[in-house]
Length: 268
Image (cartoon, rainbow, N blue to C red):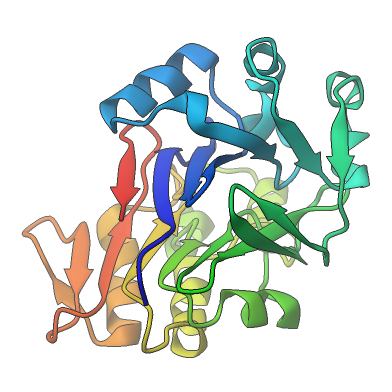
């Protein structure tokens, strides 16, 4: 598999989310939940040219995924893409000129085929994505309480897998959240736990998979080391550093790492 798609996570977590998927004909910004200033600063850290962004693609309408979009659009003339439910979910979104897609549609952006699939979250009509070219593929799925058959099919065997691993189940159960919020996070329209993400890797990781990026870690209910232990055990990987914030399989073919709220990350 020839690398033609690259992942640049600018922010991932409950305080704001923004990811750049770089393709052969430009890039796609997935969600815009941080300020334009922060977006540009983190892109500069990674050496990204935000002038290469051809489209903004929204997963759903929660503010940590769309809060920076209006200001960003004041300086952006590319395509905005979302489901009808997402585009109509907030007044400031409904005022923007979205291209409407269905959560099972396939379409072209930046030289990549984008296959959308439905996710399970407590919003209007959320979706995840598989980005592919003839020789490469990347799967992106956050903010979902479960992985349905469409998600499992779309995420299977990609070279780069960006998958939610939001919380440690014990930390959530014993943590400071009120009961209703614990139930929301752990429910089928909430967020994937470390254990759920680990269970999924058995069917999602294939011969072409090189990197798994754990996404949307909760700062209150998770730790990178707990996430890494769960995911690493699922694929037979071992700690790659003393802090256990990265893991690799003994043959070196598969790396597992964590995206963060405040530190950008690139996967080539």
